[in-house]
Length: 137
Image (cartoon, rainbow, N blue to C red; front, side, top):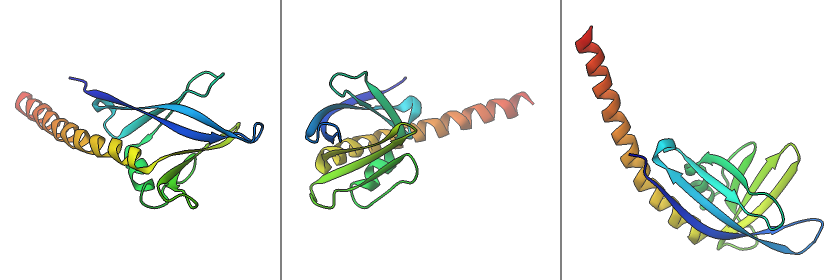
């Protein structure tokens, strides 16, 4: 059974062209079909939705201290301790989006519980498959 849940939040994006903040509705999705990842879909007004996929533990760590290397980095906002800032890098450029740290921690807490269940189930499934292989040999 594929278990998934969604969490909706809004980030604040500062676009260099406009100079002002743009509110970015964001969908966070977890599925036990990919129990180590979170899917973040950004709905920037006037643009097609964009989804980034990365490890949910990175999101959790980034609410406490700077985390990540490469394309996705997450860290507490220096000037606003109740916020978390995501830095997303692509060949086209980079963007920073801010979220409520509490909101992200709540999501990661739910993911942590579901991921532990998923990993246990995967381990049991692997044990059964190995036993089937060994019995058939």
